[in-house]
Image (tube, one colour):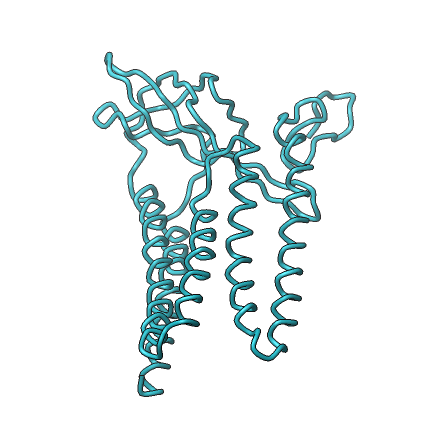
Length: 264
């Protein structure tokens, strides 16, 4: 594909030409590299510290603190990065931060409490964390399944919508952005009433405040269809649900079996 007939193929892997690249992809490339380096440094430091403390008599508990501090540190780095980018904060970052803080607090309680308290907290972690992730996975998976099940065939009415907000998902390889996806939220007016609805994920650039053409279902105006949005099959949504929900539940079942076999 050429931009002009007398030019060579000069677009990149995202479909952008050298003078058409979105500004955020250029600006965020350095930030993504810095974030990746910080996460790697934190991970390496935590692993080394846990290894050293694990071999010191009477100081093994510090390795436990370092393990949960790693979760909290990664969550904090991601939150700060998203704030700098102006992106919508990711739920996963808050989950990691919460696990870090709660882990340190509970580890302290285990180390200073009696045997009964220790066992209760161990079971709370063994059952609670997988169950939490299973519920979180069910929430996200249900949205994908619902989206794939709802027919967009009745989205035939054209409206002009304003992009009220947009989140950006980037995929990088060796510090180089290889894919950019956008998830916009639209605001539009239909029959003198204003609606807000989330659009599907698309590789086409979406800019907050710009106007885009979408189609809505006149019988259900909150159901929208954007021509450039990616289509997801029901099979793909179900596989994601199996991974997001089945994985944590399988881990919880493994803990239950282990406790049962140990007579605890």
